[in-house]
Image (cartoon, rainbow, N blue to C red; front, side):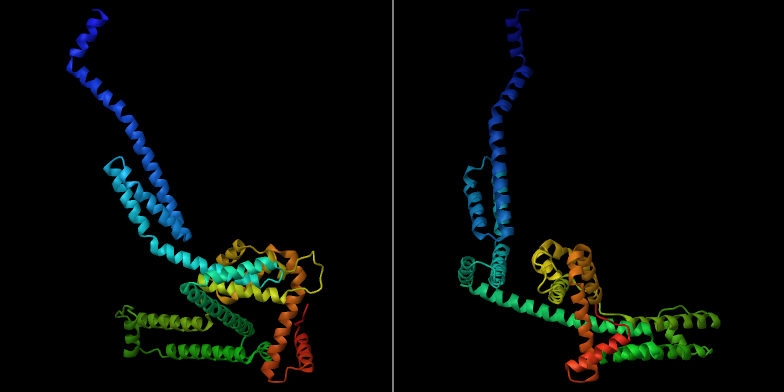
Length: 397
């Protein structure tokens, strides 16, 4: 059969003809599919840009991306693409309120950062004036003014809370030392003479409450008789009661012992763990306190002390690292962790400031002794208090 006659026969075959038709449709549809794919890519890119603008609080950019998507509706290649566009536009519309709030917070934070920068005596005059002008522009928005005032109040409250926490930490440290010495011993009495009145009172009350709890426990188990009161005690705790009196008494003694131990544990519990927000404020205050105490005056300018490390070298990432380490700790543990972190990461700077830091702690203890004894804070009394501390083996570096 010749090629021509074979071709004629094939064309006369319906299945062959349909196959050619389908292939022609597929080839003809390729440009349309490419166009639809390009359209989807562009729409997705525009939507992502809008979402990024929303995260940054850029209202203008968000609005621009929405308008771009709206403008693409008329050129959508098919109904599916049009519906996807409508969904993207709706999603960006839903981000408008949160974007405005982010933009407001960005302006508030910018003002606070510029105000802090202006306080730096080393900042050039031109930069200072540029910050002043920018603050004036941003403060023209009443919402920004209100937000700045609110945030400043929150920061002051956080700082005050941190100072309270620091004082509480000092008090807890004193109480802890007294508790270790054991109430009523010579060691306890020696420590009590150099501790604050509040710490002595708290340690004494705790010891007396513990003694009372133990005494109550002993009295409770000394009675070997099974009574209705003991039965009610077990039933209130949902402890099964059997026909065996000895077993019931054993359960009673165990339950009373557990209650007594819980009472003692509650007396020894310190303030609870700090959440992240509280930890951030506490870390900032503690670092500032350490920096102030560890500032080495008239020293070699090329050798950093701990004050320079904290105020100039520490990065926001390091600050976040410390906050992450102390979140979940109590105040006393937090101060210890911050001190340990500084010693580990900046050993030379810490070494240069260590003497000043120890002297500051020594001076603080002298002040506590003067306050406890209710005498005037004079050089003579401070010298006398320092001698008392040295007699007890406590010295400045």
